[in-house]
Structures are given as C-alpha cells and as structure tokens.
Length: 286
Image (cartoon, rainbow, N blue to C red; front, side):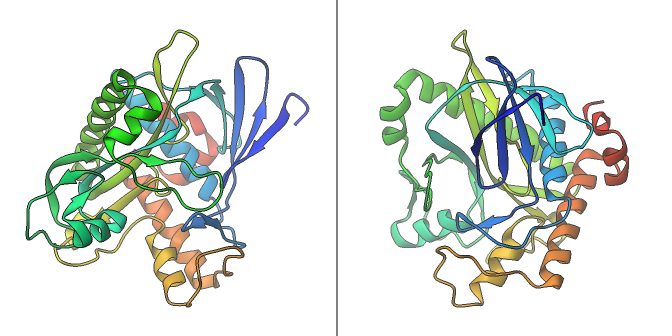
C-alpha cells in the first residue's frame, strides 16, 4: 500500500495515514469475542462490516455527519476523515440482553437507569436507553453511568451524544424491523472534527457492533437466535475458556455458520446481493 503509512491496529481494523487529513481503514476478517481476538478468521467478514457501515453512513447523514470519504474497490477499505475520537463507547439498548440483562438481574438498573420491576431476558424496554462504556485498549470495556461519561467528555457534549445516538438507533431499528430484523442494541463511536462538530466514525449498525435478532423467532424470556457474534460467543461459552488471551480456534461449522449469518444480515438490511457489493462496493451508497 504505497500511498499509506501504517499507524495502528485495532481488534478488527488496520489503520493507515494517507495524509494529514485522511485515514485508510482496512477491515480484516478477524473476529473478537469478550474483547479477545480469536485465531480463526471468518471469510468476507471485513467486507460485510465495511459495506454495512457505508450503507448506514449514507442514510443517516441528515442526523449526524460521518467520517466516510470513499469506499475502495476491495470492499473492505474506506478512506475517512481524521477525527479526535471521544473516549467512550456509545451504547443504545432497546431490549434487555447481554451485560444489560446481567446488570438488571443484579441491581434493577443498567448504567444508572432504573428500569421497571419484573422485566425478563430480551424484553423490549419502554424506550431506548443510552448506556455508555469505557474504551479499553486491552481487556474488557466497562459499563459506566451517564454522570461518569459526562465527566470524561463534558455535560454539553454528553447531552449531544446521547440524543444523537438514540436518534440513530430509532432510525436504524425502524429500518431493520421493516426487513424482519430486531436491532436489540448497538454500539456507536463518535469523534470531533476540526470545526468542533460531532461526527459518526468507526462502524455503524454491523453484526460486530450490534445485536440483531430475526423478528419471526423473537420471544421475551429467552435468548433469541442472532445474526451477529452471539453464535461465536455461545460456542466459546461451552469451552470453559477463561476469556483471556489466547482465544480458542473455531471449528469449520462455526466459521461457516457465522459467515452465513453476517451475509444474511448484510443482504436483508441493504437489499443488495453480497456478490453485487463485491463487484461494485458503491452499490450500498445508492
């Protein structure tokens, strides 16, 4: 990649500097669970994340600006604006699942939100809630309260991030529901540009950053099947693994099943055939 200088590696992405204003993000086929990168890749996963993110960026720019400048022909690389990223993960939950369900069972609260009594696993919440988390460079992200997040980014910016995150969730969850998918929760990341504007960055509403359930198989008080990393998480939970490095190898059937779920989510949400995207990545922008 002669036009780029490697500057960082994330759990999934390699980050290159193109110049003072632009970065190149390359989404690999690596998969992480419990914040540990597993040794087994999932073919085409990086293209799914890249294409889906671009799809959502193009459809939500009336809500908030985004960092995407261009998709490259490989379908897994994006040219993006440089941003000063905020030091929090912006999580919106519309349903009670994952760590939110565990916290609710223990305390009746999720990240400082007191919820009604008697809710069951996977229950739809009365309205979406914003539940920030810290960004861990190593180890696990940790849920924090809104007050703690505001201490990190300031009260005014926190209010803007909370409102914008919930607006984005409402838009994406409505779109997904019309296509037979429940968006149970999602994680977003924002940065600030040179003018001080809030900008959506990283990825948006992908199977890596979201919990997607098939609507026709959803039932409260259960763990619905999913189109996301939960299939891999569930496999890893059966191994007695301590959720620290090194992660376990994935068998072929888990890899194939995960790839199939990612591709189905991509095609149902974008209404673009995956092979058509591979041939012409800009198909998701139209």
